[in-house]
Image (tube, rainbow, N blue to C red; front, side, top):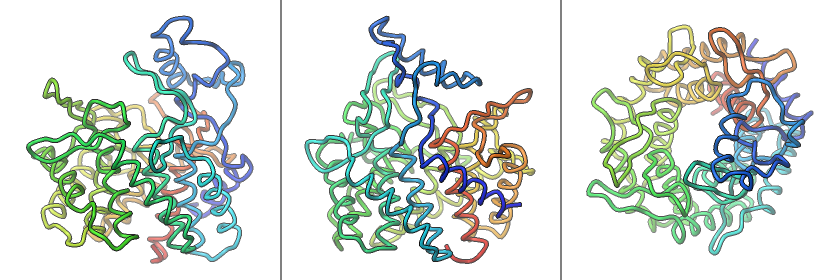
Amino acid sequence: MFQASLCKLLNYISENEFMGYDPYDTLNSWIPFQKIHRLLPAYAIQAGKYNPINIRPILGIAKGLNPKGMGLLLKSFCMLYQQEGKNEYLENANLLFNCLKTNPSQSNSGVGWGYNFDWATPGDYLPAYTPSVVVTSFVVDGIWEYYQVTQDSDAASLITRAADWIREEIPARQFAEGISYAYTTQSKGACYNASLLAAEVLAKSDGLCGTNYYTANVNKAIDFVLSKQKPEGEWCYSYDPKSGNERKQIDFHQGFILISLKNLNELLPEPRTDVSKAISHGVQYYREKQFYDNGQSLWRIPKKWPVDIHNQSQGIITFCEFSSESNEYLSFAHKIADWTIQNMQDSKGYFYYRKFSWYTNKIPYMRWSQAWMLLALVTLKGKLNGRQ
């Protein structure tokens, strides 16, 4: 079932040439939401996100290439090539890499990447392709994997230039506990997973160059996030420096934080025992509090529904990556995959967005669902075969 599922997903992605819709792409419509009312763009995005009926063709929203999704796909195809050695996987990786290389977002220094749609909240509006730390980091992660396969000098250059962009343009807010890198050049809060993702780009640049130029700041970014871990092992989503309050959203971002801490500890010149302890505590919480024994995830603690494909895919990836922590984790990653395939994969190969207790949102989002599930299944495949 697992191998058949992966093949069907690969076929779907190939048939769609890496293009698809996104939960947040409503502002790619021909409708001038911002001109109608300044708050309408934010509400339109939320309406598009929660509507289970895909009306995007009616709104004039075309399938697009999402840079973050392309970064995830790039990593997946590189991993598949390492596992099986098939030229078709390397050819797909080459296509994705060249597209990302030739289409970075505009930046005053270095390179970054952003989403292929305008983004709006009641207080902010970001045009399409505004570079963000999160998008850039996942693109860099894909390019990092591509470099391991090809040793392409352009790949190495893009990683170091992405680090230049973060150093020069992304605010690093100072706290007593450490520092936190902002989400974008305009961000004001401290998002834990975004800050660690920025630190990953910096650490990878050091790793390529054989330097410790960013080591001090990477450690300070780790310090701040470790200081925010709760007694049970979980992290909230972000911290507001003005109010001193945290956004108490515990979901797949727990997995993001754990993976980033693992990656950073492996990239540091000297691994930190406090990071290892925080990871073990955090993974235990992730397993015991955020998943049922059958492999179904909770949405956000303590809410059960909906089951979001992001939670499922991140669970597979996280428990694969920490399979050395416990003999149970790899088998549990397989269990999550089995549940997801049985309950959230369409006969056409793509995975559904969200499953509620009484209905399922079956819109086939490329970045949110397919790219993440491909990476999850490829990661699981590698672990089961002892190749990743």
